[in-house]
Length: 325
Image (tube, rainbow, N blue to C red; front, side, top):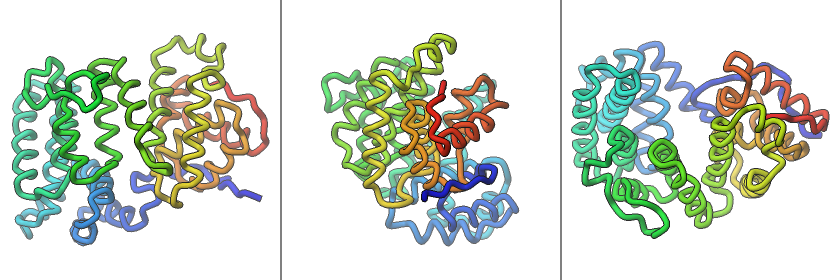
């Protein structure tokens, strides 16, 4: 029998990555040596380095721990990448808040990205950070945001930045999600074309197979909730087939190769499309871990997200096809 943890979900940004969990907890306590060692150990693994620096930077952005690190070892390449990540996060947050400092922070962040790209030429992270900042240039006034795609169906955009990231790490998950977010905010029809292009080329087992599930949740969020529930969105096309194909890809993937958030999207979609046996498989793989998304996006309110997650898990175990969201 497949066992699913009955415990309350654990929302830890490191997910399945035990070494990263230790580094995150140390950073929160103001200790940076485990982070330094972790990044040094992943210097030759750009995909893992990307995902780990993304998590570590979000933690570091809430403290002064990188300042302490810089006083001790200012030339550490891992520090430089995290500093770039942090200034980018600050710039994005300032822009979202409409801060009067947003413009200055954006310039600082862009310079940090280009400096990091020059200092660590094999690292995809500076290019991914530039992709994140592309969201702030909605008029595409910068030359690097007006490149043609290799797919003539896709509009001009920051394809050069995207290609630079993939040249250093083909299949980089964050680069693809950054590009998806870019089109969702700049020109929504292109988001679907982009995802279709990506999944048609992604190898079986790749976490990029989960990208269409993000489209389905985004579609749900922008519909009348009443209409979406009445129509049972995930039982209809293209959402049902997206879910089935994502599950088929995950089922042959290496254990632990999909992050918690992608598995959370998959578990939700399987439950919502009444594919309960498959949903139990994914909930079992998640074990105690969970992510806030997509549950916060599909629940009636953010406060009800965990209750919806627990309901979905219980219904999957019981095999009751009563999902509504």
